[in-house]
Length: 254
Image (cartoon, rainbow, N blue to C red):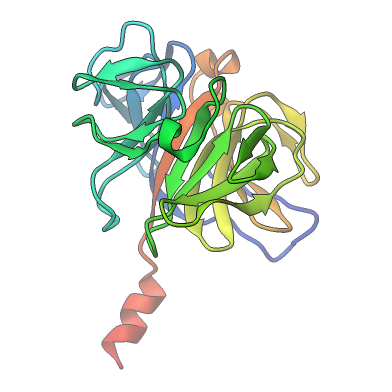
């Protein structure tokens, strides 16, 4: 079983149960597929089923000659279309997207880096969305001055077009957060740019962690599925939690 959890600071914490995890690897890699093997590139989004432990792969932005998908978040949360960020400037639907732009597959910029005052050389390399208000949740590849405040590459940052950039969570990991998915106001999935010792567990760049303000839990280890991930890391991340059965039953009796 690939869902694991361990923590020393918060013994009662358990990982959020997940149905599906979508992610992008930084190099070509492979995963088990129904009837064979799914081979994936850095411009393809892998959809991995926790129940079946099988993967599929799609190039949602088409085949990108030189760019990698650096962040994305799925539609279906009430906040509009799926959104993406890339690691190098690339034409999407006829519009040049900088590495700090967040955009849809139709070429619409949700976050325009130039308008928002994001300097050249700063990449948004972790991207998610808060469904309660549709704010973007991001992290940058380097220390960046945004809305008058300095943010480090291990900070989780909130952005909306009215209030600009603000700190969501300071992790103090000491290494770049390479992918993020917003689970709740106090829980996020993350993956790291390089392996590092976290306060609770040893963190590797091909693993996905669930973090809160005081804990880290191992959610998914891709090395347990295919050895090609020993040399790969996770560039982008989105997840679908399992329904909370208890709330469904309790609601039906109210």
